[in-house]
Image 1: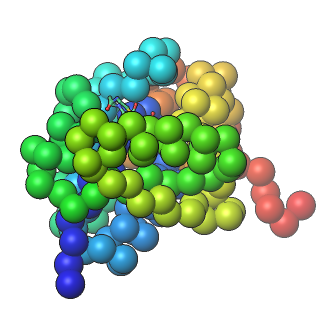
Image 2: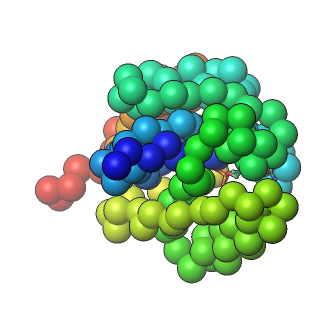
Length: 168
Ligand code: PNS
C-alpha cells in the first residue's frame, strides 16, 4: 500500500537531517510532498521562500513534490489530499513543540501527524545554527547539501571554512 504524506517545514535552509526524514518517509510511505511554509515563531530567517523551495527541489529525489504553501499546514494537507503529516524528531524539546502542533492540527482539521526519529548522527543539526555559522564564515559543508552551502556563501558573501578533519 502506498500512502501520500506531507512534510511541512520552514527549511531555512534544508539540511541533512531534513533529507534523512524525506528518505525515511519515501521508504515507509511512498509519496512525499514537501511544503515550504512560514513559521511565525521564526521571523529571523535568511533565505527568501522562493529560493528555499528551489534549494529543496534541487536536493530531494525527483519523485518528491516540493511547493511553497502560505497559511496553515492543515490547509496544505487538505490541498494535496495527503493521508497524514510527517515530522522529524531530534530531541525531547522537539517532541514538546511537535506534540502540541499535532494535537492542534488534529483538533482543528482531523489531520494526523506521524513522527520519524532523526538519524542519531544528525540529531544536533539545526537550520538556526547553520544560519548562524554561515553568517560568520564557519564550516557547514558537512551539515547541508552542496547547493545550500553555495547559496549561504552567496547570501553572506564570505568564504566558508572546511569541516574539521575527523582523523585528527
Ligand atoms: O521547520 P519548522 O520551522 O519547525 O516548521 C514549522 C512549520 C512551518 C511546519 C509550522 O510553523 C507550521 O505548520 N506553519 C504553518 C502555520 C500553521 O499551520 N500553524 C498552526 C500550527 S498548529
